[in-house]
Amino acid sequence: MDPVLSDEIAVEVVRLGLVREWSTARALRRLTELSARAVPGCAGATCSRWSLDGHLDTEQRAASHPELAELIDVQLDHAEGPLLDAVRTRRTVRSEDTLTETRWPRYCAAMLRRGVRSFHTTVYERDDTIITLTLYAVQPGVLDPAETSMGALLAAIGGTAIANTEHYGGVQRTVVQLQNAVESRAIVDQAKGILMNRFGYDADRAFQELRRISQTRHVKLTVLARRIVAGQTPASD
Image (cartoon, rainbow, N blue to C red):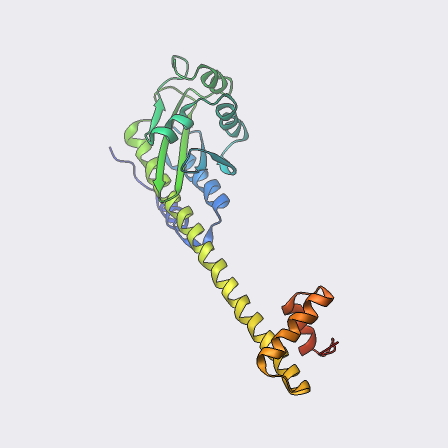
């Protein structure tokens, strides 16, 4: 039977996909919270963003519970575990029972100490964004593949939201840089006009004089220009 989204979860999923509402860190946290609530049998979740070469940005991960966050560190410290396998192969990794699991012995021991008896790790990749979402259960065999497809859906939505957020942020930074450049050019042109009017310089000579004063006084050109326009600095030495 396919998992069914409740109205409340459906609204949260839609919100997760809205670019302007999330930073990367916040989107990861929300993804873990939604997964723990939406997937039957899931008692908690972790989510991480990885680089294409398989390295984890330690600032871009989230966990629904502190002890689950520690499980990410265990895998990184020992350079083994389902997260690393999932990122390397780009495939889902799961275990029905950590008590009988023979892969990753140190990691399984760490999970058992924290009461984890089964888990399911999903990988989502888009452009240069790789997201892993791991669902944890306190009982063996309760994370049914049909139910954990909800986790895969959430990982895809969350990964897309994160990729779009980062792209949107990059565009916004470019816009701000262009605005600053335009504003800087305008204030320098005003300062040049003052020098041209006061000393009879042409445009090139006025700009050269601005640069000379800027270098002599160790002041940025735009800062000097603002001071000249505001009448706080003599137009020439």
